[in-house]
Image: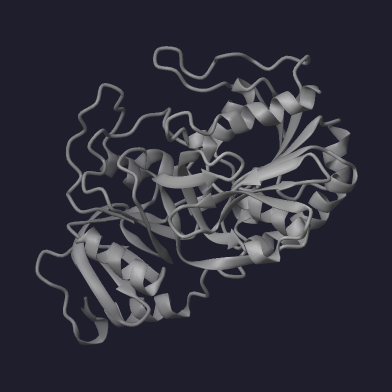
Length: 388
């Protein structure tokens, strides 16, 4: 990396990543033409790039993929977690090649261009990953111009002036705007998603969408629930109008303390009404805030499909998928919130359970099916508990 103020754009460079400190990394742009400012993070997954790019939890972020071959299986209409991508862009080592998969609908490069997302190839992603691990997740601008025309000083200023994710409520930007009944089960090759519309005899779960991944709702249906999805701004009264047997708190982007301004009072009311609760990721953090704990911004966050988490009840280690840059501070948990899971990478909290209410949550993503089924028991436990 070199200082953007003293650099000229190298010959052949059509993409650039510019840091707030004025340093820059050049490469070959792909996907949409333009620029975007956000937080740079890395993801260690070797598959699932389309699911990652469409995960609403990546709003405001640019993904540095550690696996070098991204895009080689193309894209399709099934491997998405939301209607449109939420990650601002991505950085890859190798150029995106022609797709080689029977499920491909269109090449990744074309999909990125159509979705307005910027890509940067030909970059040493391992070096970027080491930099993030040492210095933390930086604010950056990713830019793509086929002619290689970049005002590097202006891009550096744009990165420096971006306020960052701390204190930012992004759930309000990515949540669904209306309530909806969710009927689809999990996807199966040759069958699609139509694996069992949820009937009225099933326990009714009201899911609050703070930026949810669709596969969470599918797994709730697979576990035997009937699911109604409400926006992040749903009031306690609107939740109770649905006559829920249980309340689900979804994942989502941004600072949980900012989202908590309107979400935590609702969750507290649900706890007081003794509504059973299950939370994932941002939902886990919001449950922690609702019982009096605090959340903290992590140095680099956890993102990938290979994170070991120890279950404290029996010592079992789950291989989990994660995507979070904030964590619940274990030292601030009240006496009635028992830690249930812990990361074996850094010891951070990955789960809590209340001792005086039917409420629990985890920091990771059981619906992403790492392991591949290590964590599905959480959906089963929640739904089965609603039948009691």
